[in-house]
Amino acid sequence: MIVAIGTCLAMIIVGNSIGLAVAVLILWLGTLWLTRPEPVIEIRTPDEGSVSRQAMVDLVEPFSVPVLMLDSQRIAAANAAARETLGPHIVGQDARVALRHPEAITLLDKPQGTAMVRGLTGARSIWQVRRVSIDQRFSLIEMVNRTAEADISRSHTDFVANASHELRTPLASIIGYIETLADPDAKVDSVTAARFHATVLRESRRLQSLVEDLMSLSRIEAEKHDLPREQIDLGLLAASIGSEVACTAGEDRITVTVTDAVVTGDRQQLDQVIRNLIDNALKYGDGRQPVCVVVEREGNEAVFSVTDRGEGIHPDHIPYLTRRFYRTDPGRSRAAGGTGLGLAIVKHIVERHRGKLDITSKLGEGTTVTVRLGLVATLPKALS
Image (tube, rainbow, N blue to C red; front, side, top):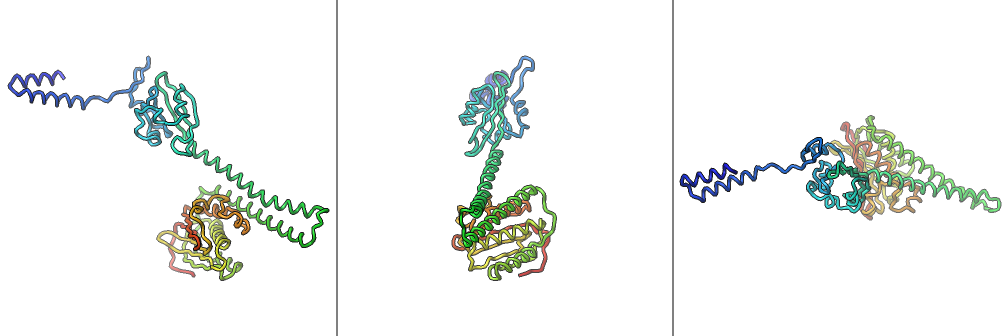
């Protein structure tokens, strides 16, 4: 600044206009202002001197979870995870404004502690927020996302509850009829006894199917990280299963059009996918219209689809069809012998094979379930 003022006076002395000298002074002072150093936030301790704001940023940046460095109640530094979660604008902001949640704000009034904050970043989000004091001025805020853990726990609880209910229903029916048949005072005639025995047999088979599906789902989930390695002709497998189904359900109940399409997969699980989808289509489709099974090649994918001409499914139900025990019509499903696990099993098998599952449906027209798997080889031969 002294040099700038001296230069201005020299310009006036040598005869330059005062306006020009003042303009040069203003320009010089402006460049000094633009190149001023960034204010430094410092942590001062008696022994260690001071730590710059950049040092604070370097301290918290490597953490994978959101971490905030507070100067009293103001956010002095935030790592990348915190900026992504709460927004890049939070640095320099009051922590109470940045967190905007009563439970988190209550935690900020304490020197240290932990709180479970629900709804911090979304309606169903759950965060464990912990504050640790460094000294009387500075503190750290660590945020751990517990939403996924809560969702898994809730999913397990729902699954156990639904499985218990599904198992209890046929068991209660079986026990009730057996107790009646075993009661010497019941005086059950032969016709009624035969009907009771038929009901017990039906419910026992339903219970067996439910247990088998539960065990199958458990096995699939246990193997979901292991990629299948066997090469299988999906078209040939679908044609074979279609022929078996036609023998039992009737030639007019199913049409099969396939092309050779070799994929990498687990034969038993792909067999289960094909049978489950055909079985669903036969159960819930129009009995007067055939179920169409198609295997074709599209680019580098093998596309397997099953189409029925039934009542169709309302669009509101489609996102939930692959949930365990989800049924659009529980009464009809149970009457048809469904366990509510067929599409859940299909979904998990397709995920293990790194494929794609798609369900489309129109009310009054029918439903198509499509599975897409990566091709290993493209063969010229076609079957129909």
